[in-house]
Length: 160
Image: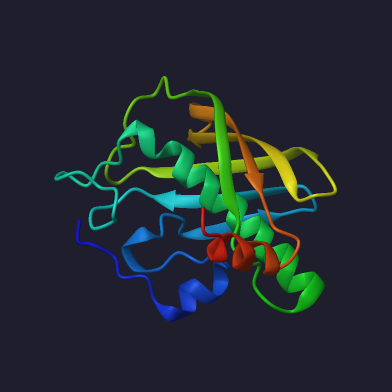
């Protein structure tokens, strides 16, 4: 299997800030108010692939985070007409990958469902990665989506 270059058109469909070999999602298959489903084809040539094109199980939270980022991007495009500002992964809880590594050539389904959010931009997502109906990995990700770009500007300007 040869590495797949992610085209500009693909990046336009996937409203995430990732570029080139850092992109793991291939297609968004469902978007709702509080959830997103996406498809991932495990392939060589990503920033996370091993020598055989497999993705180690520890990459699961990154796949989940990219799906959350895509949901934030879709929401921002709908509400503001522009991509979402950068989001931050605050934590991963109860991550388990009983299916082990994600094998080259497999098509994975990732689902992220927002289970809680607060008015300051923090949210928790329940996430699963499956293959043909079999759950391969699951976990809860806590994320922070700044309400505007001033948060990041002030954090970058800190001198401590």
